[in-house]
Length: 188
Ligand code: IMP
Image (cartoon, rainbow, N blue to C red; front, side, top):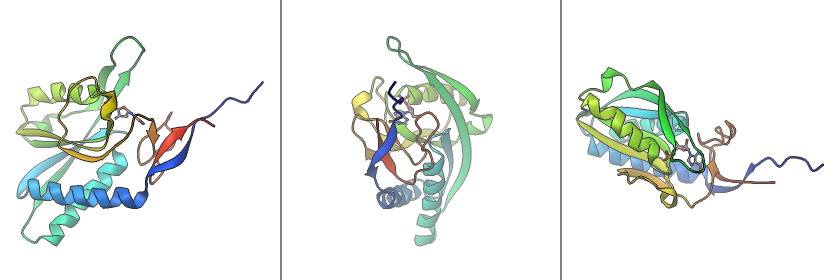
């Protein structure tokens, strides 16, 4: 009997240095856009964790480079899950997070990847009763070819092709999250 094929990350799609360079650019842009304001970075667990950490430090570094520019950053997290099957759109559910602290704040949702758009759509609905001052979205990766729900994305790190990617927080069956780069997942 042939051994079961286990998908493995093969080719590097976005290198560590490219990721870090682009994240510094995003940090500079966000620091300028939210100058002298309080901003809640709302991380979507678990995939955004590495991006969240590096982006929040990039915003801080950008402030150091421009004295007088200050963004007061707060951290909040939500954890969502989605169930897919072949015939129905995904059902997204909130597992935890989304506290009252978000009321009347400027919120920047930090995502690892926007694929169908259903997670973001759900999150917008969830945040709406909290009456935030503003809600914007920053995603490391955008896979527009898979979009089912139209969503507005304010900051995009990279657009990726219609392929399953892993690394830098993104997983396949909870594996490969700690790769420092983005790789294409291929079967062996
Ligand atoms: P959406 O609701 O379809 O936009 O899906 C967003 C979520 O699906 C992301 O936060 C990821 O957790 C997951 N996802 C979508 N595409 C990929 C991929 O290529 N690799 C790993 N996770 C993915």
